[in-house]
Length: 111
Length: 113
Image (cartoon, rainbow over all chains, first blue to last red; front, side, top):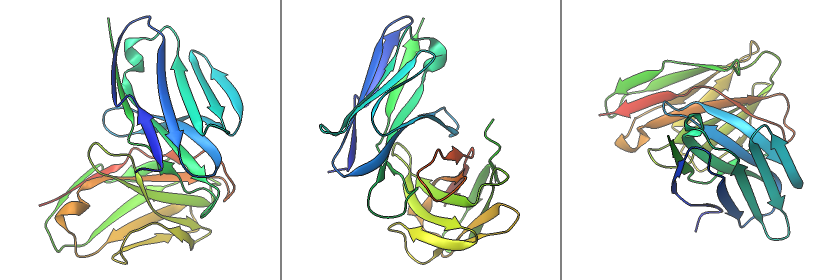
């Protein structure tokens, strides 16, 4: 079993829909990261959080430390949001900035 | 734009060969991490360098080695290439060793035939 699990693996939505991607982890963490990866490979960091909720534009990330669960929400989705969204954690043991990644959620937003 | 660059973009090698991948971190970033991402998978941590010293290593054999230079550039070297080494190799830099946002390069796609 992977230390970081994401669901769903694939997601198709129509433009304007509200999207939720879930992440569960099984290890103690210092921080959780949400990342976006476009075709071709480049990864962009969206959020880093260790408690509560963060918002940036149409993106919202929440984390529940007790339940070891985080969600990434996209409001009013747009085709340009199509990408792979990856959840990663910084475990409390080991190298401070080492990340352990989930396998990603592939999002396709259609017109 | 993150300011982290990687070269080359694509590379094709044959089994048994050696390869060197390069990364140029954002100026001032003392920490660089290297990751291997197989097709359809999340990235896997290879190792991390801080101020030119290896600071942690994932579950990769010794034929994966690295260097970090004072000018914020770094290298990933892989000897005796195997077919399973075919992957996207990503470097990511951060300001310090502390828990911090990591800035990723665009990656080098390595194909081993």
